[in-house]
Each structure stands twice: as C-alpha cells, then as structure tokens.
Length: 532
Image (cartoon, rainbow, N blue to C red; front, side, top):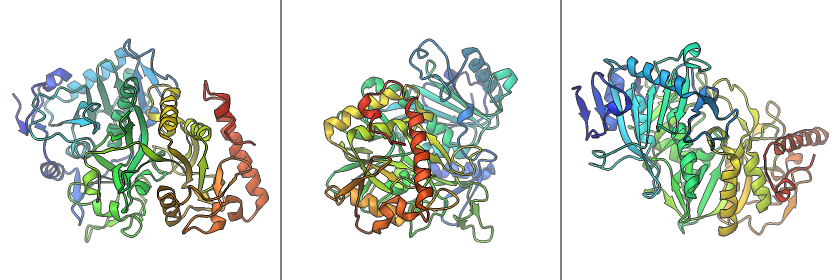
C-alpha cells in the first residue's frame, strides 16, 4: 500500500476513482506542509510577506472553450446545451479518465476532502485530487475546510481530478486542445488537464452547485456578499473584473464571501471558504483588506516578484493582467464565519461598460432588475480568460452564463420571486469607462465607485431625486455624497455630445439584439430595456 501522509484519509479511497498504484498519497495536508512540498518540488517560492508565488504557465485565465459536459442519461434533458455547455460523449470522457489513471501510475498525489457550501443543510462533500501541491493548497484555502476528524467517513458527492501535466489529444479524446475541463454529472466527476490555472477547479464546483441547488429551491448566484453591523446584507453580482471582490471587501462592513453564494428561504450563504482576488495595481491604500490578507498561507498567481528582496510589483502586468491572490476568507478583517447572512436589502449589478455610456450608478425597477440580470452586460477585461487582451463586450446571462448548466430562466425566476418577497432594492453600478469608450475615456475612479456603493448601502440614495436616462431608462440619482455631480451623468463627461449619443444608441441596439435571445420573457421585462 502507498504511504498516506497527512490527517485522516477517508475510508472511501482512491480506488473508487479508478486510481491505483500511485507513489505517495498526501491526504488532507495542512497549509505549512503543502507550502514545504511546493517549494521542494520547485512549484513556487515564498515572497517577503510569506505568500507562495506560483506561475500558471501559458494559460493565465479560464479556458471556457475547452469545457465540456458529458451527455448522459441522468442529466441530458436538463442541461442548457449550446455554446456554454458543449456536449462530449461518455465514451470520450471514459477514454480521458483511463488515460489520466494510467498517467498517475507511480506519481505522487495530494488529496483534499472538504465541502462546498457554508450552510450545513445545503453543503455537498467534495474531493480534490491534485498532482501539484500548490493546487491542493489553493483548493484547501478556497473551499470550506473540514473540522478535525470530519474526513474519516467522508464520501464525496463530486470529485475533481486535476492533472495539469496530462495533455489531451484532440483526435483521440474529442477535445479542442490539450486543455480540458470535463464534467460528468452522473458520475459526480470532473476531469481537468492541460492547464495549470487553478481557478478551473473552483469554477467547476460552482457549476455543479448551479446544477444541484436550484432543484432544491435555492438560488445559486455569481455574486459577492457583505453585511453591515445591523445585519443588513448586500449582494454584488458581476463577472470577473467588475469589482465584486474589491467592493465587497469594505472595512466598514463584514465580508460573507467574494464570488459565489446561495439564497435560501432563510437568507444568504457562501459557497466557499476563501477568496480569489485580482491583484493588478493592488495597494494598501486602495484595497487595505485584500492587501493585509496576502500573507503566509495565501497563494499569489502570475505576479512579478523582485529577485533582490522578494517583494511584489503589483503594477507589473507583463505576465498577465489577471494576477490573483487566493486566501481563506478569515484572512479578511471582520469576515463572517461561517458565511451566513440574512435576506439582502440591496442588490448591486456590477457592469464594466467598455463603451463608457452607462451611468456610474442607477436605481432599477423590479422589471429593469430582471432585464439586466438576464442581460448580464459587461466587458470581459484583459486576462480573465485565455486570449482576452483588451475589454470585449459581452452579454452573460445572470452575470455568470459560463457556469450555468441549467437555462437562465431557472435562475431568473428564483431571483424575481425573492426580490418581490423580500423587497430588495436593485441598482446598476458601472465600474467601467467614463468620458469615452475604452482607449479614449478612463476607467471609473475607484474612490468614486466606493462612495457610490457606500451611499447605496447606508441608504443615502434611497430618497435622492432621480432622472430617467433618455436611452437606457434607468433612474439616475442627481447627487451623491463624495461624487462630483457631473460624473453621475455620462454625457457630461464626454467632450463630444454627438459621439456620446451615437455610442449610447449603439450599445442600446446591442442590448435589444441580445434581448431577442433571452427566450421566454414577459413583455413587462422586455419593455424595461433600453430604447435605441
């Protein structure tokens, strides 16, 4: 039998995943030991503050075009098939699985038994099997960590096998490239290979929760969440790069989580046990909580480290703009442990508008909220996905279509019911460009955006007089504490009003074109959209 280093290996061993004849198996190893393994194996180095610095190689973001869902009897009729959920046969999946099992002969493995979901009634047991020690550390810090002695009888509902050095052959395995993320709902198994980007693991489990929880009446959401001292909860929806992590890490509030949550009849709960923050241009002054969270036990991806003193140049994006830090949520001051909160008083839809025409903040009617949730408009910013080098306009249903196995209408229906029942206030916040489109204008000032968010959460904007935007119809506040009045009206930030009007109408037409693809949507919701 191979050695089993670590704490409490499960009785449900790796033979259940067709993995046999490996060398050392390191089960449920703590952060210090994993960091030692990573350094000894030359996977990374420690920076001056104690965080582990690693490189993900060629792929510095997710590879959505390399993700496939197995078409199998237990789930085939439910899946939202198309460009997001591309099918692959069980035969090809099994071929990849056999290849990975053969590849592991004589290899060392790192195994983590943990949970997805902070709510005891809705969490699922998962297992992560890695060939990299640092990937296992990443998983340990991002998922919900088990308590001592909790893993002995751990039987995973879903297992992730993550082998970056195992490359697929498209002609043999039916993939698009050497990289792959294959999800088999029937077998409860995710296979990842050909990429060292650790975020693929966390997003695969998120996709699984998006499949399981709505069937239990729980809304799964791609959003951050925080809470005030009086218990008022706020949600921050948005794709990567729109500011979920940055804006939810507020020293005046308590962080529930920065990326993935569920909404039950009782309230909000975090899916994860950690945060995955972008670090490009990170500074202690701009983002103090994230800055302080980067220490021993954290993982820094693709940052540039100075060789003389091992400090990080967070302004250097020469490797990628998508530099990242992964750390346990308790590394954030005043984090909510466990990650549970009440029903949200405010819901913020964060969009990074590359056209530079959406207001920095606007209040939404319930119908407008549903329209913008189904639209999910933003710009994918550089580095968040492989091949993205500058902002690209996209409409991503529910602000997270890459992670939705079920049709968007499933999630929209649940959100609409909850907004109506709990009277949540909904807002659209533009963290993108102002004064012109990308290349002409400037990215919205973070201090101004923070002031706008603070005004929302403290109730300062609830009674401020608003004016409807003539094209987008949203209700724009006429004033906000700490923000120059002219910033609130996008047309006033442009040098050429004619160009602003043409650009705004161009974006409105894109909204209208996307609305035709929404599927079954009520006339009231469709009428709440922009008018070109």
